Amino acid sequence: WHRMFPRLVAYQKKHGSANVPRNYQDDPKLATWVHRQRISYSGTGLSEERIRLLLSIGLVLKHHEITPWDEMFRKLVAYKKEHKSTLIPQRYKADPHLGMWVHNQRTFYKTKTLSIDRINRLESIGYVWD
Image (cartoon, rainbow, N blue to C red; front, side):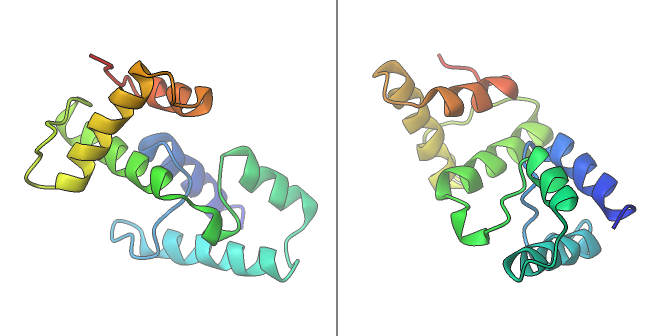
């Protein structure tokens, strides 16, 4: 456990989220470990200390609570890592859903309908509003 948790922390710092996809090809052992933590949590097999540590880096222990917004944010973080920018065209051919999502975040921001938490998360990765 103490060898895997630092790997999860590194993943969180790199991707902006601790929610490792089950099919994460770069580190399948980490993906499996995170899945097992969720299973242990649901059966109360995790100590309070381990739960606290996992929650402290933003791991969603109840996988069904991961929202589509979180998944799109994870895609945006990956895009920024590859392209060094959060400026994605609205008609982004490689991922049209991501292009529209980014456009919608700007619209929600301008109309003041985007939550402070989401604004802060986007700004934490250098999101460009204009």
